Image (cartoon, rainbow, N blue to C red; front, side, top):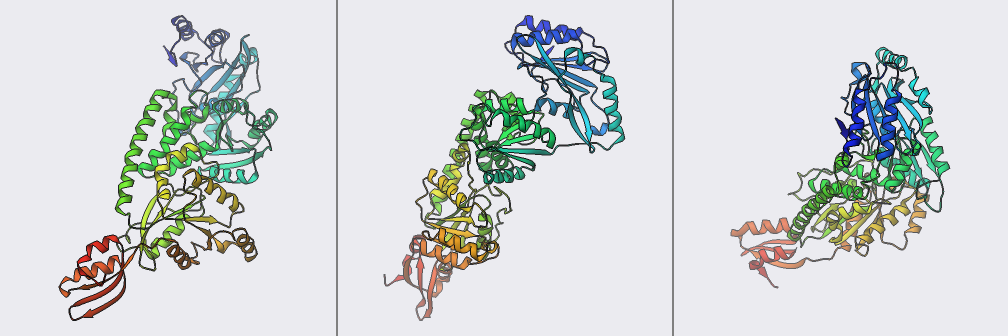
Length: 594
């Protein structure tokens, strides 16, 4: 039986491949000439990879149309102190026998005795590369040979090599290395690569090297020039990197070309951001929005994306719907997008209902660059000024990392003038925020659109705070919320010298700003005074005379209004208070002197 992607393959081709099962391969050879002739001939004919798995007795146990991961082999645990006893040979229709990231991932994950890639072009076999498991500092890694001729590959001493590897595994406490070590590549600036490193860190990826190439125009095939890609390939080998991350969005063909050249998984900034969002989203609507953004991003990349979505590759770029990518066609993805969009519409209507219910309450939203300190500020204000009803609600997650907060939370706090407002913590913005992500999160970011006041939180301890302010304003403009009443909140003043503060004040002198430290509690009362001054005052000043028999109404006013004067008179309790429309209507019958 021929496994893998057999769709559209003629029976005569499948029958030719079936012959391979009858071929016996010598135990000490990687493969024999007869198998090479058949799979290279079929590869030329159908322009697809052919993979063959052979056990140590020389029996062919699997033939598949597809890459090295198409072959069905049970995964061996490294604790068993042995290899799988299977070698896989497969063709590369592009004529390049260099083992891909997918091949090397399959080699170590499946603990193959050997993996062989046979380059095939119109003429026939070009060359062959062999890959073996190896041990480096007690970690299972991959090792490849130089490009070999067919004769050199057939005569390679397979038995001795496999015996040596297994003896080394038995003598050492070998572990599988699932960590990801990245080379970052950009064409813009060191600042942008610094931020990319922080994004990688948020995905538990260690950065081993930066590569910055100043270019006016991005290469349509390789993003950077061919010479630079060859340099990255050598650097990848020297630094033992197993992923290369590019600082801009790549096309499917760029990913495929780069992976062919470099030989490891290649991802872009957008994939990295989507991965962080997939990890951090906790609420139902947050998860829906992330999945929707992922699917929209991947829909246009179904043909051509390489190991980013490998089932065996693991690591960044494989979370969520990506794991099903190889088995899902465009129609299924479109159906899923349709279903998720409908679900978001329902959530949007629910949010509108909630917003209508608190329509009289002024709405304030925290916006800003990711990791500017919004969640810390929100938690501090909530703990200091929360309403009695909300005092038991927990704080939102805060941490010194990018995108610590994804799920929008709204809490009520009481201002010093006794007015209740809602304070909403929103997802942080970032430069080059994927458009699909902004679109997907619009239902969440509507809290910003309907706010009465925005607090734009800026981390002034960052060297790039001006660019970050600009990036936030670009997203606000996209949301049509740039003209909202806004207070610029210059956060983390405790980390900035007085000399630096003088420069910062000069830069923002034309804007309405306030200097604070959310963590140290500096100037928070002053911030709330500014909020009071900026918010439209919707309260009415009213006098009441409430009979002593109805003490509940007096208590209601104390809870829900700003009581200025209270006197106990002969015919009842006199209260002068500032009230909103709801309180005004509830207590109307006791109103005096309107």
